[in-house]
Image (cartoon, rainbow, N blue to C red; front, side, top):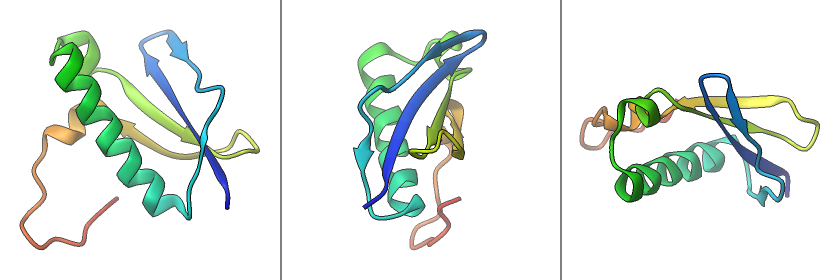
Length: 85
């Protein structure tokens, strides 16, 4: 299984994920990113600084697979929607 890394970018600050996690595919990485952001917002609160952050998901070759703005998790998906990204 491929390994994905969930790095956080807030303005000019960059917090790398040194360990990463093995996941089946980019769709599963998207789901993990969403849950991770929701947990961080729950723990830290929805401060303006945190809402401007982006979770950059990269693969083992350091290529960006997806960029997930923290503020995007506040948008509710329609019930029964299969839209992921």
